[in-house]
Length: 191
Image (cartoon, rainbow, N blue to C red; front, side, top):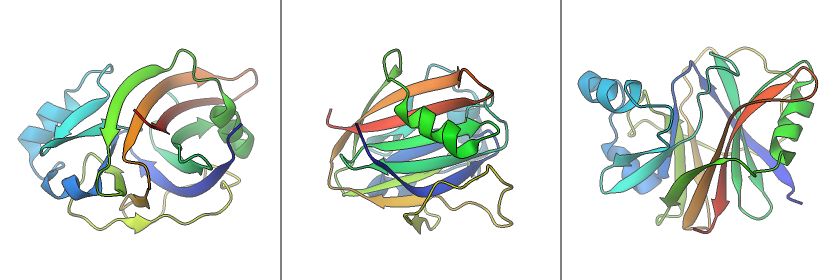
């Protein structure tokens, strides 16, 4: 069983987030290139799990409007190098996040392979340009409650990793036996 550590959180207004090799993110244009953004992000279907970014690929990690429209997504790292992005809702927030991490991955959607040759993984909103500064991860406990967004725009996260290949597994809106629900994007090392 994996041991998870909370390394950051990302605020979404319903837009998807991208996980991409940090070396490729400079060429990514968000909504500053409105036509491309409308075509490649707004018009993307629910089955899409990746998009081209320069010569590589970014995977879509986050933004399940059924769990919540405006929402925090918790980013966690496991002792085996796996990463999870969890969007959760429920009266006992920490418990719902923990249940999402423990939930079996049978039935998850195969999201394809992500290469991270630079050793740095960037996770940021698809609505922003890839050249914007990112925050380093900061380990700590899962927040006790969902809470409100911060007063400043969310810059995204930069995660150093020793793994060069990840496999994405996506679990969309999932109800739990009590009042909780979640969506989860799991990046497993190896390909």
